[in-house]
Image 1 (cartoon, rainbow, N blue to C red):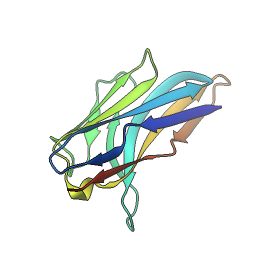
Image 2: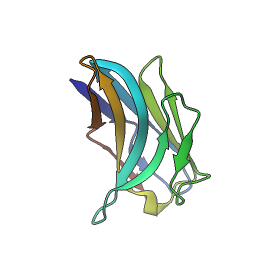
Image 3: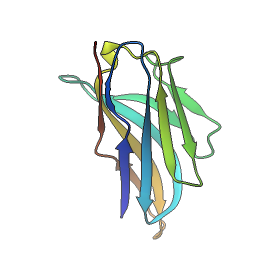
Image 4: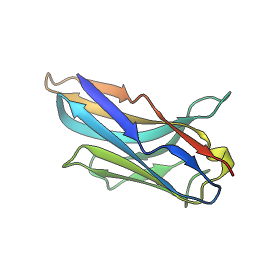
Amino acid sequence: QVQLVESGGGLVQPGGSLRLSCAASGSIVTLNAVGWHRQAPGKQRESVAGISSGGSRRNYAAFVKGRFTISRDNAKNMVYLQMNSLKPEDTAVYYCTADVTIATGKDLEVWGQGTPVTVSS
């Protein structure tokens, strides 16, 4: 019904930047709040950033504040995560999440399959 597909992950040196993208598709009436989570090897999944449906409200985990920026393009059903000043501890699989209203009127929580980010010299 609804798919989230992330892209943009990869290998980057410490201090470098990456931009993750998340494309939402399917029977979407409204793409509501969206966000990014991550899971590092051997650790629990954690929230990274979130953005409201209109884009006016954003929240960030303390460990990325000032380095990462979440944004969205509602016309294209796209969500982005600009990651700057990357650190080795940012290494993780990054997941896009979304609260979606579908054609039946039902609200769903959808997760993407994840895109890996490795920060290493």
